[in-house]
Image (cartoon, rainbow, N blue to C red; front, side, top):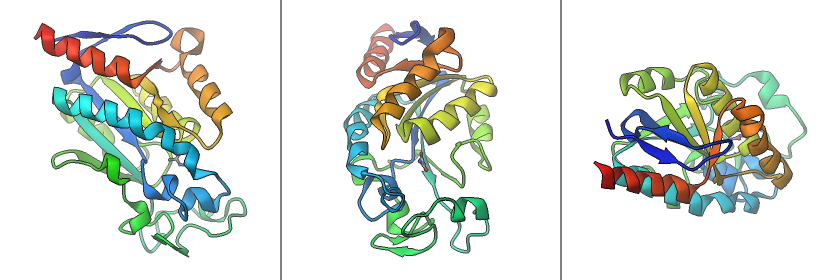
Length: 228
Ligand code: C5J
């Protein structure tokens, strides 16, 4: 099986594209566009645009390499039966989960705001995973999907760095996956949290993963293609 080397921190990582999944976390209108969940929590959603271009690079490279691509969407059933009251009621947002907004009901499956942004839209055959929580393993069939494809390495990008990206990487690490944050393809409403969030992953010799970037990921896949 073809292996390739990824430039990463705290050190390079050898991986087999055939055993690797790209997971694009929650690049949804609800987080990236005005009027959605992110804005109701008082955030400047324009800050998340920084991740779109690098996510496109990572997605394009993964697609060209024939890798498993998984898109996640955070959201809830229309009857809110899967939404913990503590999540709905937490904080003091101007509009809460399930309430009507300019992109439909906030953070509800099937509503326009729940959809993935146009520039990163899933292609036919890619896995779209609906998750009720922050982590992509919580109450989803992700573990089964990764097992079925014999995946051992997760390349993770999306939003937000310190919430859903971090939670998913921590969950994956505890389940034995080698997890890499594609750092420039992640973003946060808090630039400092983004920076420190990436630092946390790779500190202590890579305490729960590695950090790389979209171009390095694409270069590693090109090298794998040339070696095959
Ligand atoms: C948040 C996420 N931040 N996708 N969700 O609530 O990170």
